[in-house]
Image (cartoon, rainbow, N blue to C red; front, side):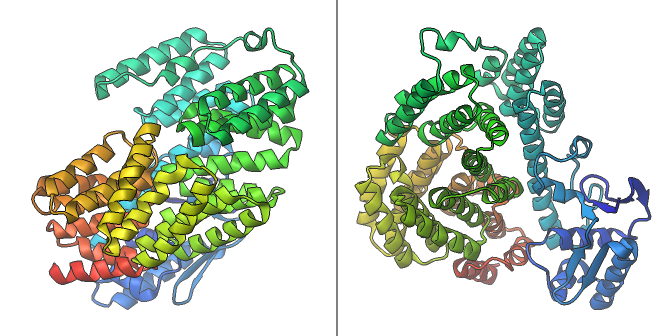
Length: 601
Protein backbone atom coordinates (compact mmCIF):
# COMPACT_ATOMS: atom_id res chain seq x y z
CA UNK A 1 0.00 0.00 0.00
CA UNK A 2 1.09 3.57 -0.63
CA UNK A 3 0.75 6.76 1.33
CA UNK A 4 -2.74 7.99 2.26
CA UNK A 5 -3.22 11.67 3.06
CA UNK A 6 -6.19 12.01 5.40
CA UNK A 7 -7.64 15.52 5.44
CA UNK A 8 -11.15 14.68 6.69
CA UNK A 9 -11.18 14.58 10.47
CA UNK A 10 -7.89 14.88 12.34
CA UNK A 11 -5.31 15.26 9.54
CA UNK A 12 -2.77 12.42 9.40
CA UNK A 13 -0.50 10.59 6.97
CA UNK A 14 -0.75 6.81 6.77
CA UNK A 15 1.47 4.29 5.03
CA UNK A 16 0.40 0.67 4.80
CA UNK A 17 -2.43 1.48 7.19
CA UNK A 18 -0.17 2.91 9.90
CA UNK A 19 0.25 6.53 10.90
CA UNK A 20 3.62 8.04 9.95
CA UNK A 21 5.35 11.34 10.76
CA UNK A 22 3.18 14.24 9.65
CA UNK A 23 4.13 17.69 8.34
CA UNK A 24 5.08 20.14 11.09
CA UNK A 25 2.89 23.16 11.64
CA UNK A 26 -0.75 24.10 11.09
CA UNK A 27 0.05 26.20 8.04
CA UNK A 28 1.79 23.27 6.35
CA UNK A 29 -1.40 21.22 6.68
CA UNK A 30 -3.42 24.22 5.50
CA UNK A 31 -1.14 24.56 2.47
CA UNK A 32 -1.47 20.85 1.67
CA UNK A 33 -5.27 20.96 1.86
CA UNK A 34 -5.41 24.03 -0.37
CA UNK A 35 -3.15 22.47 -3.00
CA UNK A 36 -5.21 19.27 -3.00
CA UNK A 37 -8.60 20.99 -3.24
CA UNK A 38 -7.93 24.10 -5.36
CA UNK A 39 -9.83 24.17 -8.65
CA UNK A 40 -6.60 25.13 -10.45
CA UNK A 41 -2.94 25.23 -9.34
CA UNK A 42 -2.54 28.48 -7.34
CA UNK A 43 0.23 30.99 -7.95
CA UNK A 44 2.88 31.53 -5.30
CA UNK A 45 1.64 35.10 -4.90
CA UNK A 46 -1.84 33.80 -4.12
CA UNK A 47 -0.55 31.29 -1.57
CA UNK A 48 1.50 33.99 0.13
CA UNK A 49 -1.47 36.34 0.39
CA UNK A 50 -3.70 33.56 1.72
CA UNK A 51 -1.40 32.01 4.29
CA UNK A 52 1.81 33.94 4.90
CA UNK A 53 1.04 37.65 4.54
CA UNK A 54 1.77 38.21 8.25
CA UNK A 55 5.26 36.61 8.06
CA UNK A 56 8.44 38.74 8.20
CA UNK A 57 9.51 37.20 4.88
CA UNK A 58 6.34 35.78 3.24
CA UNK A 59 8.06 34.13 0.25
CA UNK A 60 10.62 32.50 2.50
CA UNK A 61 7.82 31.20 4.73
CA UNK A 62 6.11 29.69 1.69
CA UNK A 63 9.33 28.03 0.54
CA UNK A 64 9.90 26.53 4.00
CA UNK A 65 6.39 25.11 4.15
CA UNK A 66 6.67 23.64 0.63
CA UNK A 67 9.97 22.05 1.66
CA UNK A 68 8.32 20.60 4.77
CA UNK A 69 5.56 19.12 2.61
CA UNK A 70 8.08 17.49 0.28
CA UNK A 71 9.87 15.98 3.27
CA UNK A 72 6.65 14.56 4.73
CA UNK A 73 5.28 13.20 1.44
CA UNK A 74 8.69 11.80 0.38
CA UNK A 75 8.26 9.65 -2.73
CA UNK A 76 4.46 9.98 -2.85
CA UNK A 77 4.19 13.36 -4.58
CA UNK A 78 5.89 16.06 -6.62
CA UNK A 79 5.37 19.70 -5.61
CA UNK A 80 6.86 22.33 -7.89
CA UNK A 81 6.37 25.29 -10.21
CA UNK A 82 4.59 28.61 -10.24
CA UNK A 83 1.65 28.14 -10.21
CA UNK A 84 2.34 25.41 -7.64
CA UNK A 85 1.27 21.95 -8.75
CA UNK A 86 0.94 18.98 -6.41
CA UNK A 87 0.96 15.63 -8.23
CA UNK A 88 0.39 12.44 -6.26
CA UNK A 89 2.18 9.50 -7.86
CA UNK A 90 0.46 6.22 -8.71
CA UNK A 91 -0.37 4.13 -5.68
CA UNK A 92 -0.77 7.10 -3.35
CA UNK A 93 -3.97 9.01 -2.62
CA UNK A 94 -5.95 11.41 -0.46
CA UNK A 95 -9.13 10.51 1.39
CA UNK A 96 -11.06 13.30 -0.37
CA UNK A 97 -10.56 11.35 -3.62
CA UNK A 98 -12.98 8.78 -2.19
CA UNK A 99 -15.80 11.29 -2.60
CA UNK A 100 -15.50 11.18 -6.39
CA UNK A 101 -14.36 7.59 -6.81
CA UNK A 102 -17.78 5.99 -6.84
CA UNK A 103 -19.90 4.27 -4.19
CA UNK A 104 -18.34 0.87 -4.88
CA UNK A 105 -15.29 1.60 -2.73
CA UNK A 106 -14.14 -0.23 0.36
CA UNK A 107 -16.83 -0.19 3.07
CA UNK A 108 -14.17 0.23 5.74
CA UNK A 109 -13.07 3.41 4.00
CA UNK A 110 -16.68 4.61 3.81
CA UNK A 111 -17.08 4.11 7.56
CA UNK A 112 -14.25 6.58 8.23
CA UNK A 113 -15.93 9.41 6.34
CA UNK A 114 -17.68 12.28 8.07
CA UNK A 115 -15.05 14.29 9.92
CA UNK A 116 -14.50 18.00 9.26
CA UNK A 117 -11.80 19.04 6.84
CA UNK A 118 -8.61 19.75 8.85
CA UNK A 119 -10.40 19.11 12.11
CA UNK A 120 -8.81 21.14 14.90
CA UNK A 121 -6.86 23.45 12.58
CA UNK A 122 -7.88 27.11 12.45
CA UNK A 123 -5.83 30.08 11.26
CA UNK A 124 -7.35 33.21 12.78
CA UNK A 125 -4.60 35.39 11.33
CA UNK A 126 -5.64 34.50 7.76
CA UNK A 127 -9.28 35.64 7.24
CA UNK A 128 -9.34 34.77 3.52
CA UNK A 129 -8.09 31.24 4.18
CA UNK A 130 -10.54 30.84 7.06
CA UNK A 131 -13.40 31.85 4.75
CA UNK A 132 -12.21 29.26 2.21
CA UNK A 133 -11.93 26.61 4.94
CA UNK A 134 -15.46 27.24 6.22
CA UNK A 135 -16.88 26.82 2.71
CA UNK A 136 -14.84 23.67 1.95
CA UNK A 137 -15.80 22.08 5.26
CA UNK A 138 -19.49 22.49 4.50
CA UNK A 139 -19.11 21.34 0.89
CA UNK A 140 -17.10 18.22 1.75
CA UNK A 141 -19.39 17.33 4.65
CA UNK A 142 -22.33 17.36 2.21
CA UNK A 143 -20.33 15.23 -0.24
CA UNK A 144 -19.53 12.70 2.49
CA UNK A 145 -23.21 12.35 3.34
CA UNK A 146 -24.10 12.01 -0.35
CA UNK A 147 -21.59 9.19 -0.86
CA UNK A 148 -22.76 7.27 2.23
CA UNK A 149 -26.39 7.71 1.13
CA UNK A 150 -25.66 6.39 -2.35
CA UNK A 151 -23.72 3.45 -0.91
CA UNK A 152 -26.69 2.55 1.30
CA UNK A 153 -29.10 2.70 -1.65
CA UNK A 154 -26.70 0.63 -3.76
CA UNK A 155 -26.49 -2.03 -1.04
CA UNK A 156 -30.30 -2.18 -0.94
CA UNK A 157 -30.45 -2.53 -4.73
CA UNK A 158 -28.05 -5.48 -4.49
CA UNK A 159 -30.22 -7.21 -1.87
CA UNK A 160 -27.86 -6.43 1.04
CA UNK A 161 -30.10 -4.66 3.60
CA UNK A 162 -27.86 -5.24 6.66
CA UNK A 163 -24.88 -3.19 5.42
CA UNK A 164 -27.38 -0.64 4.05
CA UNK A 165 -28.80 -0.24 7.56
CA UNK A 166 -25.29 0.22 9.02
CA UNK A 167 -24.55 2.95 6.47
CA UNK A 168 -27.91 4.63 7.11
CA UNK A 169 -27.19 4.76 10.85
CA UNK A 170 -23.83 6.39 10.10
CA UNK A 171 -25.45 9.06 7.89
CA UNK A 172 -28.09 9.84 10.49
CA UNK A 173 -25.32 10.45 13.02
CA UNK A 174 -24.12 13.19 10.65
CA UNK A 175 -27.57 14.61 9.76
CA UNK A 176 -30.38 13.35 12.03
CA UNK A 177 -33.10 15.57 10.51
CA UNK A 178 -32.86 14.34 6.91
CA UNK A 179 -36.02 12.43 6.02
CA UNK A 180 -34.37 10.60 3.11
CA UNK A 181 -31.80 9.05 5.44
CA UNK A 182 -34.54 7.90 7.81
CA UNK A 183 -36.40 6.42 4.83
CA UNK A 184 -33.36 4.37 3.84
CA UNK A 185 -32.85 3.07 7.39
CA UNK A 186 -36.52 2.09 7.77
CA UNK A 187 -36.54 0.38 4.38
CA UNK A 188 -33.29 -1.45 5.18
CA UNK A 189 -34.72 -2.81 8.42
CA UNK A 190 -37.93 -3.88 6.68
CA UNK A 191 -36.10 -5.67 3.87
CA UNK A 192 -33.84 -7.38 6.41
CA UNK A 193 -36.99 -8.95 7.89
CA UNK A 194 -37.16 -6.71 10.98
CA UNK A 195 -40.65 -5.34 10.46
CA UNK A 196 -41.06 -4.37 14.11
CA UNK A 197 -37.75 -2.51 14.09
CA UNK A 198 -38.74 -0.72 10.88
CA UNK A 199 -42.04 0.46 12.38
CA UNK A 200 -40.32 1.58 15.59
CA UNK A 201 -37.73 3.54 13.59
CA UNK A 202 -40.49 5.21 11.57
CA UNK A 203 -42.23 6.17 14.84
CA UNK A 204 -38.96 7.57 16.25
CA UNK A 205 -38.54 9.64 13.11
CA UNK A 206 -42.08 11.06 13.41
CA UNK A 207 -41.47 11.97 17.08
CA UNK A 208 -38.12 13.60 16.24
CA UNK A 209 -39.59 15.69 13.43
CA UNK A 210 -42.52 16.83 15.57
CA UNK A 211 -40.23 17.75 18.47
CA UNK A 212 -37.46 19.46 16.50
CA UNK A 213 -39.26 20.82 13.43
CA UNK A 214 -42.87 21.05 14.52
CA UNK A 215 -44.01 18.92 11.58
CA UNK A 216 -44.71 15.34 10.65
CA UNK A 217 -42.12 13.23 8.88
CA UNK A 218 -42.82 12.73 5.16
CA UNK A 219 -45.09 9.79 4.22
CA UNK A 220 -42.10 8.11 2.53
CA UNK A 221 -40.75 7.17 5.97
CA UNK A 222 -43.93 5.28 6.91
CA UNK A 223 -44.24 3.70 3.45
CA UNK A 224 -40.69 2.38 3.73
CA UNK A 225 -41.77 0.08 6.59
CA UNK A 226 -44.32 -1.63 4.35
CA UNK A 227 -43.13 -4.57 2.25
CA UNK A 228 -45.57 -4.87 -0.64
CA UNK A 229 -46.80 -8.22 -1.95
CA UNK A 230 -45.12 -8.41 -5.39
CA UNK A 231 -47.95 -10.50 -6.80
CA UNK A 232 -50.81 -8.33 -5.61
CA UNK A 233 -50.20 -5.60 -8.16
CA UNK A 234 -50.29 -7.93 -11.17
CA UNK A 235 -53.31 -10.08 -10.34
CA UNK A 236 -55.60 -10.17 -13.35
CA UNK A 237 -52.80 -8.93 -15.64
CA UNK A 238 -51.04 -10.98 -18.30
CA UNK A 239 -47.46 -11.30 -17.06
CA UNK A 240 -45.17 -11.40 -20.08
CA UNK A 241 -42.42 -9.40 -21.71
CA UNK A 242 -44.89 -8.18 -24.34
CA UNK A 243 -47.40 -6.84 -21.80
CA UNK A 244 -44.63 -5.20 -19.76
CA UNK A 245 -43.26 -3.56 -22.90
CA UNK A 246 -46.76 -2.30 -23.77
CA UNK A 247 -47.14 -0.60 -20.39
CA UNK A 248 -43.66 0.91 -20.74
CA UNK A 249 -44.37 2.28 -24.22
CA UNK A 250 -47.75 3.63 -23.12
CA UNK A 251 -46.18 5.35 -20.10
CA UNK A 252 -43.53 7.03 -22.22
CA UNK A 253 -46.16 8.23 -24.70
CA UNK A 254 -48.30 9.63 -21.88
CA UNK A 255 -45.30 11.51 -20.48
CA UNK A 256 -44.63 13.11 -23.85
CA UNK A 257 -48.29 14.15 -24.04
CA UNK A 258 -48.10 15.73 -20.58
CA UNK A 259 -50.47 13.22 -18.91
CA UNK A 260 -48.16 12.70 -15.93
CA UNK A 261 -50.49 10.89 -13.51
CA UNK A 262 -51.57 8.38 -16.15
CA UNK A 263 -47.94 7.94 -17.26
CA UNK A 264 -46.74 7.14 -13.75
CA UNK A 265 -49.48 4.56 -13.24
CA UNK A 266 -48.59 2.87 -16.55
CA UNK A 267 -44.88 2.88 -15.70
CA UNK A 268 -45.54 1.42 -12.24
CA UNK A 269 -47.49 -1.37 -13.93
CA UNK A 270 -44.57 -1.93 -16.33
CA UNK A 271 -42.23 -2.31 -13.33
CA UNK A 272 -44.58 -4.74 -11.58
CA UNK A 273 -44.99 -6.92 -14.68
CA UNK A 274 -41.27 -6.91 -15.43
CA UNK A 275 -40.47 -7.96 -11.85
CA UNK A 276 -43.04 -10.74 -11.92
CA UNK A 277 -41.78 -11.94 -15.30
CA UNK A 278 -38.21 -11.82 -13.91
CA UNK A 279 -37.08 -9.94 -17.01
CA UNK A 280 -34.01 -8.01 -15.82
CA UNK A 281 -33.56 -5.87 -18.93
CA UNK A 282 -37.21 -4.79 -19.07
CA UNK A 283 -37.22 -4.27 -15.31
CA UNK A 284 -34.19 -1.97 -15.54
CA UNK A 285 -35.71 0.03 -18.37
CA UNK A 286 -39.06 0.37 -16.59
CA UNK A 287 -37.51 1.37 -13.26
CA UNK A 288 -35.39 4.10 -14.85
CA UNK A 289 -38.35 5.33 -16.92
CA UNK A 290 -40.55 5.48 -13.80
CA UNK A 291 -37.88 7.36 -11.87
CA UNK A 292 -37.40 9.78 -14.77
CA UNK A 293 -41.15 10.37 -14.95
CA UNK A 294 -41.28 11.14 -11.24
CA UNK A 295 -38.27 13.48 -11.43
CA UNK A 296 -39.17 15.47 -14.53
CA UNK A 297 -42.95 15.14 -14.50
CA UNK A 298 -43.93 15.16 -10.84
CA UNK A 299 -41.03 16.80 -9.03
CA UNK A 300 -39.97 13.56 -7.34
CA UNK A 301 -36.63 13.88 -5.58
CA UNK A 302 -36.32 11.79 -2.42
CA UNK A 303 -35.09 8.37 -1.38
CA UNK A 304 -37.94 6.56 -3.16
CA UNK A 305 -36.90 7.97 -6.54
CA UNK A 306 -33.19 7.47 -5.90
CA UNK A 307 -33.95 3.90 -4.81
CA UNK A 308 -35.69 3.20 -8.13
CA UNK A 309 -32.63 4.47 -10.00
CA UNK A 310 -30.19 2.37 -7.99
CA UNK A 311 -32.36 -0.72 -8.45
CA UNK A 312 -32.63 0.00 -12.18
CA UNK A 313 -28.88 0.54 -12.47
CA UNK A 314 -28.12 -2.73 -10.66
CA UNK A 315 -30.52 -4.61 -12.97
CA UNK A 316 -29.09 -2.94 -16.09
CA UNK A 317 -25.53 -3.84 -15.10
CA UNK A 318 -26.51 -7.47 -14.52
CA UNK A 319 -28.40 -7.60 -17.84
CA UNK A 320 -25.55 -5.90 -19.73
CA UNK A 321 -27.90 -3.11 -20.81
CA UNK A 322 -25.45 -0.21 -21.23
CA UNK A 323 -28.01 2.22 -22.62
CA UNK A 324 -30.29 1.93 -19.59
CA UNK A 325 -27.32 1.96 -17.21
CA UNK A 326 -26.13 5.22 -18.78
CA UNK A 327 -29.61 6.74 -18.39
CA UNK A 328 -29.71 5.73 -14.71
CA UNK A 329 -26.28 7.27 -14.10
CA UNK A 330 -27.37 10.47 -15.84
CA UNK A 331 -30.55 10.75 -13.75
CA UNK A 332 -28.55 10.15 -10.54
CA UNK A 333 -26.19 12.89 -11.67
CA UNK A 334 -29.15 15.21 -12.30
CA UNK A 335 -30.39 14.65 -8.74
CA UNK A 336 -26.85 15.31 -7.52
CA UNK A 337 -26.64 18.60 -9.41
CA UNK A 338 -29.77 19.83 -7.73
CA UNK A 339 -28.33 19.08 -4.30
CA UNK A 340 -24.90 20.48 -5.16
CA UNK A 341 -23.04 17.15 -4.81
CA UNK A 342 -20.53 17.93 -7.53
CA UNK A 343 -18.03 15.14 -6.80
CA UNK A 344 -20.82 12.59 -7.04
CA UNK A 345 -22.19 14.25 -10.19
CA UNK A 346 -18.84 13.93 -11.93
CA UNK A 347 -18.52 10.29 -10.85
CA UNK A 348 -21.96 9.41 -12.27
CA UNK A 349 -21.43 11.29 -15.54
CA UNK A 350 -17.98 9.76 -16.02
CA UNK A 351 -19.52 6.32 -15.57
CA UNK A 352 -22.27 7.14 -18.07
CA UNK A 353 -19.75 8.30 -20.68
CA UNK A 354 -17.81 5.04 -20.37
CA UNK A 355 -20.90 3.24 -21.63
CA UNK A 356 -22.26 3.06 -25.16
CA UNK A 357 -24.03 6.37 -25.78
CA UNK A 358 -26.05 7.22 -28.85
CA UNK A 359 -26.47 10.87 -29.86
CA UNK A 360 -29.69 11.25 -27.90
CA UNK A 361 -28.27 10.02 -24.59
CA UNK A 362 -24.96 11.78 -25.17
CA UNK A 363 -26.87 15.06 -25.57
CA UNK A 364 -28.60 14.50 -22.23
CA UNK A 365 -25.40 13.56 -20.41
CA UNK A 366 -23.60 16.63 -21.76
CA UNK A 367 -26.57 18.79 -20.82
CA UNK A 368 -26.38 17.66 -17.19
CA UNK A 369 -22.61 18.14 -17.20
CA UNK A 370 -23.03 21.69 -18.53
CA UNK A 371 -25.66 22.41 -15.90
CA UNK A 372 -23.34 21.14 -13.13
CA UNK A 373 -20.37 23.22 -14.30
CA UNK A 374 -22.60 26.28 -14.66
CA UNK A 375 -23.90 25.89 -11.09
CA UNK A 376 -20.29 25.65 -9.89
CA UNK A 377 -19.39 28.83 -11.86
CA UNK A 378 -17.04 27.03 -14.26
CA UNK A 379 -18.58 28.85 -17.20
CA UNK A 380 -16.15 28.10 -20.08
CA UNK A 381 -16.34 24.34 -19.44
CA UNK A 382 -20.12 24.58 -19.04
CA UNK A 383 -20.54 26.39 -22.35
CA UNK A 384 -18.41 23.84 -24.18
CA UNK A 385 -20.47 20.95 -22.80
CA UNK A 386 -23.80 22.66 -23.58
CA UNK A 387 -22.85 23.51 -27.16
CA UNK A 388 -21.78 19.88 -27.69
CA UNK A 389 -25.08 18.78 -26.15
CA UNK A 390 -26.96 20.82 -28.76
CA UNK A 391 -24.90 19.29 -31.58
CA UNK A 392 -25.72 15.75 -30.45
CA UNK A 393 -29.37 16.62 -29.82
CA UNK A 394 -29.84 18.09 -33.28
CA UNK A 395 -28.26 15.03 -34.90
CA UNK A 396 -30.69 12.86 -32.96
CA UNK A 397 -33.70 15.07 -33.69
CA UNK A 398 -34.00 15.92 -29.99
CA UNK A 399 -35.49 19.39 -30.22
CA UNK A 400 -36.57 19.51 -26.58
CA UNK A 401 -33.09 18.62 -25.36
CA UNK A 402 -31.58 21.27 -27.63
CA UNK A 403 -33.97 23.85 -26.15
CA UNK A 404 -33.10 22.69 -22.63
CA UNK A 405 -29.37 23.16 -23.27
CA UNK A 406 -29.94 26.55 -24.93
CA UNK A 407 -31.84 27.72 -21.85
CA UNK A 408 -28.79 26.80 -19.74
CA UNK A 409 -26.55 28.78 -22.10
CA UNK A 410 -28.91 31.74 -21.77
CA UNK A 411 -28.63 31.53 -18.00
CA UNK A 412 -24.81 31.71 -18.24
CA UNK A 413 -24.92 34.78 -20.48
CA UNK A 414 -27.30 36.46 -18.04
CA UNK A 415 -25.01 35.72 -15.08
CA UNK A 416 -22.02 37.06 -17.01
CA UNK A 417 -23.76 40.38 -17.66
CA UNK A 418 -24.48 39.66 -21.35
CA UNK A 419 -28.26 40.20 -21.57
CA UNK A 420 -28.43 40.70 -25.34
CA UNK A 421 -26.68 37.37 -25.95
CA UNK A 422 -28.90 35.76 -23.33
CA UNK A 423 -32.04 37.09 -25.05
CA UNK A 424 -30.94 35.74 -28.42
CA UNK A 425 -30.36 32.16 -27.29
CA UNK A 426 -33.37 32.14 -24.95
CA UNK A 427 -35.65 33.27 -27.78
CA UNK A 428 -34.44 30.25 -29.78
CA UNK A 429 -35.16 27.98 -26.82
CA UNK A 430 -38.63 29.45 -26.28
CA UNK A 431 -39.56 29.06 -29.94
CA UNK A 432 -38.75 25.36 -29.75
CA UNK A 433 -40.55 24.92 -26.43
CA UNK A 434 -43.72 26.40 -27.93
CA UNK A 435 -43.37 24.34 -31.14
CA UNK A 436 -42.92 21.08 -29.22
CA UNK A 437 -45.60 22.01 -26.64
CA UNK A 438 -43.21 21.49 -23.73
CA UNK A 439 -45.24 23.74 -21.46
CA UNK A 440 -43.82 22.27 -18.25
CA UNK A 441 -40.37 23.72 -18.98
CA UNK A 442 -41.50 27.16 -20.10
CA UNK A 443 -41.24 28.92 -16.68
CA UNK A 444 -37.48 28.29 -16.49
CA UNK A 445 -36.67 29.78 -19.89
CA UNK A 446 -39.26 32.56 -19.60
CA UNK A 447 -37.84 33.69 -16.27
CA UNK A 448 -34.33 34.15 -17.60
CA UNK A 449 -35.62 35.80 -20.77
CA UNK A 450 -37.55 38.21 -18.53
CA UNK A 451 -34.41 39.08 -16.55
CA UNK A 452 -32.57 39.67 -19.82
CA UNK A 453 -35.37 42.05 -20.82
CA UNK A 454 -35.04 43.87 -17.48
CA UNK A 455 -31.30 44.27 -17.99
CA UNK A 456 -31.95 45.60 -21.50
CA UNK A 457 -34.40 48.21 -20.17
CA UNK A 458 -37.61 46.45 -21.28
CA UNK A 459 -39.72 46.09 -18.10
CA UNK A 460 -43.04 45.64 -19.94
CA UNK A 461 -41.69 42.60 -21.83
CA UNK A 462 -40.30 41.24 -18.56
CA UNK A 463 -43.66 41.68 -16.84
CA UNK A 464 -45.61 39.75 -19.49
CA UNK A 465 -43.15 36.85 -19.44
CA UNK A 466 -43.06 36.66 -15.66
CA UNK A 467 -46.83 36.76 -15.23
CA UNK A 468 -47.18 33.87 -17.68
CA UNK A 469 -44.36 31.92 -16.06
CA UNK A 470 -45.75 32.39 -12.53
CA UNK A 471 -49.13 30.92 -13.44
CA UNK A 472 -47.50 27.88 -15.05
CA UNK A 473 -45.10 27.37 -12.14
CA UNK A 474 -47.77 27.60 -9.44
CA UNK A 475 -50.23 25.40 -11.36
CA UNK A 476 -47.49 22.78 -11.66
CA UNK A 477 -46.56 23.30 -7.97
CA UNK A 478 -42.92 23.18 -9.05
CA UNK A 479 -40.93 24.76 -6.21
CA UNK A 480 -37.80 25.31 -8.30
CA UNK A 481 -39.70 27.10 -11.05
CA UNK A 482 -41.50 29.20 -8.43
CA UNK A 483 -38.21 30.32 -6.88
CA UNK A 484 -36.82 31.17 -10.32
CA UNK A 485 -39.86 33.20 -11.36
CA UNK A 486 -40.11 34.90 -7.95
CA UNK A 487 -36.58 36.26 -8.36
CA UNK A 488 -37.57 37.95 -11.62
CA UNK A 489 -40.78 39.32 -10.09
CA UNK A 490 -38.82 40.67 -7.11
CA UNK A 491 -36.38 42.44 -9.41
CA UNK A 492 -39.19 43.83 -11.55
CA UNK A 493 -41.10 45.06 -8.51
CA UNK A 494 -37.97 46.71 -7.12
CA UNK A 495 -37.40 48.60 -10.38
CA UNK A 496 -40.90 50.04 -9.96
CA UNK A 497 -39.87 51.43 -6.57
CA UNK A 498 -41.90 49.01 -4.46
CA UNK A 499 -39.29 47.61 -2.04
CA UNK A 500 -41.81 45.98 0.36
CA UNK A 501 -43.50 44.29 -2.61
CA UNK A 502 -40.14 43.03 -3.87
CA UNK A 503 -39.36 41.57 -0.44
CA UNK A 504 -42.74 39.83 -0.41
CA UNK A 505 -41.94 38.16 -3.74
CA UNK A 506 -38.66 36.83 -2.34
CA UNK A 507 -40.49 35.45 0.70
CA UNK A 508 -43.12 33.90 -1.59
CA UNK A 509 -40.46 32.14 -3.65
CA UNK A 510 -38.64 30.83 -0.59
CA UNK A 511 -41.77 29.55 1.18
CA UNK A 512 -41.99 26.14 -0.58
CA UNK A 513 -38.30 25.32 0.20
CA UNK A 514 -37.08 24.57 -3.34
CA UNK A 515 -35.23 21.26 -3.71
CA UNK A 516 -32.76 22.54 -6.31
CA UNK A 517 -30.20 24.65 -4.43
CA UNK A 518 -29.13 26.95 -7.27
CA UNK A 519 -32.51 28.73 -7.81
CA UNK A 520 -32.87 29.08 -4.05
CA UNK A 521 -29.41 30.66 -3.79
CA UNK A 522 -30.13 32.93 -6.75
CA UNK A 523 -33.36 34.08 -5.14
CA UNK A 524 -31.61 34.74 -1.81
CA UNK A 525 -29.01 36.81 -3.67
CA UNK A 526 -31.76 38.99 -5.15
CA UNK A 527 -33.40 39.11 -1.72
CA UNK A 528 -30.24 40.51 -0.14
CA UNK A 529 -30.07 43.20 -2.83
CA UNK A 530 -33.74 44.03 -2.34
CA UNK A 531 -33.64 44.13 1.47
CA UNK A 532 -30.32 46.00 1.81
CA UNK A 533 -32.12 49.34 1.75
CA UNK A 534 -34.93 49.45 4.26
CA UNK A 535 -34.79 45.91 5.65
CA UNK A 536 -31.20 45.46 6.98
CA UNK A 537 -32.08 42.73 9.51
CA UNK A 538 -33.71 40.68 6.75
CA UNK A 539 -30.72 41.28 4.47
CA UNK A 540 -28.42 40.06 7.26
CA UNK A 541 -30.45 36.86 7.75
CA UNK A 542 -30.68 36.13 4.05
CA UNK A 543 -26.93 36.71 3.61
CA UNK A 544 -26.27 34.09 6.30
CA UNK A 545 -28.70 31.65 4.67
CA UNK A 546 -27.12 32.26 1.26
CA UNK A 547 -23.64 31.72 2.65
CA UNK A 548 -24.50 28.35 4.21
CA UNK A 549 -26.56 27.07 1.30
CA UNK A 550 -23.97 28.07 -1.32
CA UNK A 551 -21.12 26.57 0.71
CA UNK A 552 -22.67 23.13 1.13
CA UNK A 553 -23.86 23.13 -2.48
CA UNK A 554 -20.52 24.08 -4.04
CA UNK A 555 -22.12 27.16 -5.64
CA UNK A 556 -18.90 29.16 -5.92
CA UNK A 557 -20.31 32.37 -7.38
CA UNK A 558 -23.05 32.52 -4.79
CA UNK A 559 -20.50 31.99 -2.01
CA UNK A 560 -18.79 35.12 -3.30
CA UNK A 561 -22.06 37.02 -3.65
CA UNK A 562 -22.85 36.18 -0.01
CA UNK A 563 -19.47 37.66 0.96
CA UNK A 564 -20.26 40.78 -1.08
CA UNK A 565 -23.50 41.21 0.87
CA UNK A 566 -21.58 40.71 4.14
CA UNK A 567 -19.16 43.44 3.04
CA UNK A 568 -22.06 45.79 2.31
CA UNK A 569 -23.39 45.00 5.79
CA UNK A 570 -20.08 46.05 7.36
CA UNK A 571 -17.85 42.94 7.56
CA UNK A 572 -14.30 44.36 7.15
CA UNK A 573 -12.75 41.10 5.88
CA UNK A 574 -15.51 39.94 3.53
CA UNK A 575 -14.41 41.75 0.35
CA UNK A 576 -10.85 40.39 0.65
CA UNK A 577 -12.20 36.85 1.04
CA UNK A 578 -14.52 37.38 -1.92
CA UNK A 579 -11.67 38.55 -4.16
CA UNK A 580 -9.55 35.52 -3.26
CA UNK A 581 -12.45 33.16 -3.96
CA UNK A 582 -13.24 34.84 -7.30
CA UNK A 583 -9.75 34.52 -8.77
CA UNK A 584 -10.57 31.44 -10.86
CA UNK A 585 -14.07 32.47 -11.95
CA UNK A 586 -14.34 33.86 -15.47
CA UNK A 587 -17.23 36.26 -15.03
CA UNK A 588 -16.69 39.94 -15.90
CA UNK A 589 -19.95 40.94 -14.20
CA UNK A 590 -18.86 39.34 -10.93
CA UNK A 591 -15.46 41.04 -10.97
CA UNK A 592 -17.10 44.39 -11.74
CA UNK A 593 -19.38 43.85 -8.73
CA UNK A 594 -16.34 43.17 -6.55
CA UNK A 595 -14.65 46.35 -7.78
CA UNK A 596 -17.75 48.45 -7.05
CA UNK A 597 -18.19 46.94 -3.60
CA UNK A 598 -14.49 47.29 -2.78
CA UNK A 599 -14.53 50.96 -3.73
CA UNK A 600 -17.35 51.57 -1.24
CA UNK A 601 -15.82 49.54 1.61
